[in-house]
Amino acid sequence: MQHILQLTLTVLLLQICIVSVSCDAKYVYQCTIENCIHGKCYTNNTVCVCDNGYKTFYTTNNTNAENIQHINNCNYKQKSRMTAFLLELFLGYATGVGYFYIGRISLGIAQTVFFWGTICISCCIGFIIPNDRGIQLVFIIQCCFNIGICIWWMIAFVSMITMKINDGNGIPLY
Figure 1: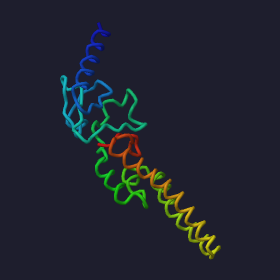
Figure 2: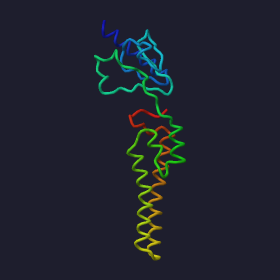
Figure 3: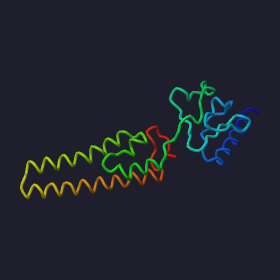
Figure 4: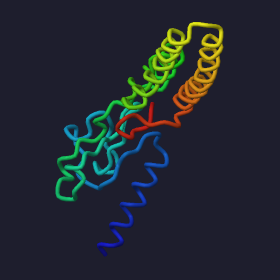
């Protein structure tokens, strides 16, 4: 009898998840205003369905079965994919600001260092070899690195607008 009840609740939960746009219900528990922060309780207060732009962010200390009643659902405001896209489109080429916005700090630093590093290397080569050969070498280095940076930049803003990238916590962009 208990298995039938669990199966029924699971099927009900899946039906709500399929119908709703944003469903983060992982456990069956008592849904209240206190633990369904930015969402609504459904199915006799056992399922919390998040509002648009919010997800449930489970940390390692609150995914245990014993702590189910203490989970705050819909507790994480998702990063805007449009904001990330616009930041990357207009400022990201030289700064990686789109990655910084979504919390992918290491990628933002890498993009910034890659861009400004090539400029510094080119300037150093220009000072070391001040003749025509040095100018040609600087031009070749700049062209190669700029092609690489341009490809990286295009992949970055396309992945941000098409939601192919998650934020720094692994949550999809909104």
